[in-house]
Length: 109
Image 1 (cartoon, rainbow, N blue to C red):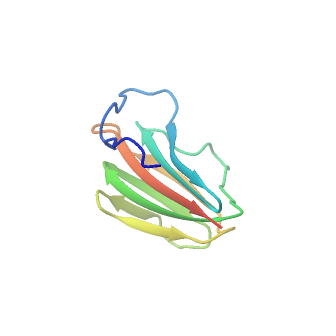
Image 2 (cartoon, helix red, strand yellow; image 1 turned 120 degrees about the vertical axis):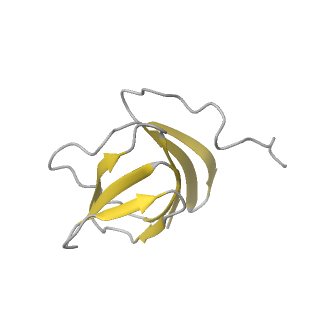
């Protein structure tokens, strides 16, 4: 069955106290999310260590990621994308507030 078309830039909230994560598609071995950040970052000393890989596309805004073992943070601007293999520890150090940072995240096994 074909789903109803939706727009990734529709209904983008502003001034969130927490990131908004909306699952757009879930199927065996894959999950696609739209994430909206408005200045949020990972808590101090927190690292993501995910069992599956993640490919992230920054649609709008900007962000800085810290990848464990990398000497410098990774800056992402609109249009930037990055593949993060499973169990590569990473964290979000900064996200732009205006305009809100919009991510498209593809999680896969």
